[in-house]
Length: 76
Image (cartoon, rainbow, N blue to C red):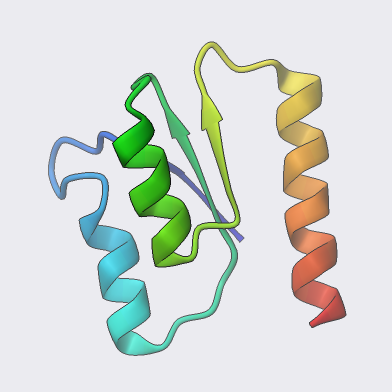
């Protein structure tokens, strides 16, 4: 599982996931973001992200979403 911050300054938030898709990497990805852009959320989910979490992060909710993403990945 990859937990990534959407606004990575070196690569840009969407670029890593676009590269994963091109290389056929199917590792579950959950993005964290401080952005409230609905367009960003739609783009990430349409690229295949398993979840999208806005900051400030509620740690209990983050842990729950990570577990659910991993459970889905294991179940196939």
